[in-house]
Image 1 (cartoon, rainbow, N blue to C red):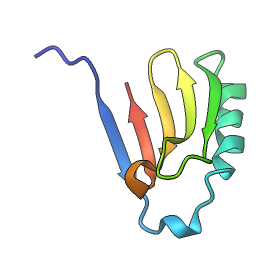
Image 2 (image 1 turned 90 degrees about the vertical axis):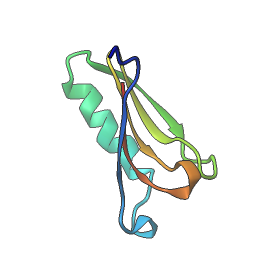
Image 3 (image 1 turned 30 degrees about the vertical axis):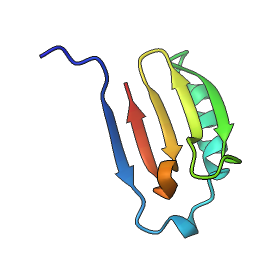
Image 4 (image 1 turned 90 degrees about the horizontal axis):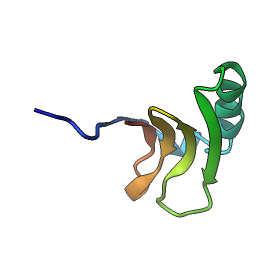
Length: 77
């Protein structure tokens, strides 16, 4: 089997206690120490039930994803 794409999402138990904006600072810190692995952050927190905060890299993207109002940490490669 030749995989083209893989997504893994770890859902948050109580999403009302988490602010997506906090992850802008967290992901920005990752960019600073990544030696070029991570290179950009996209803020879609204003989109209802959308992609949330996205950390962009060459190999994979990581996000605090809120698709379908189901918040979780998403690894997309």
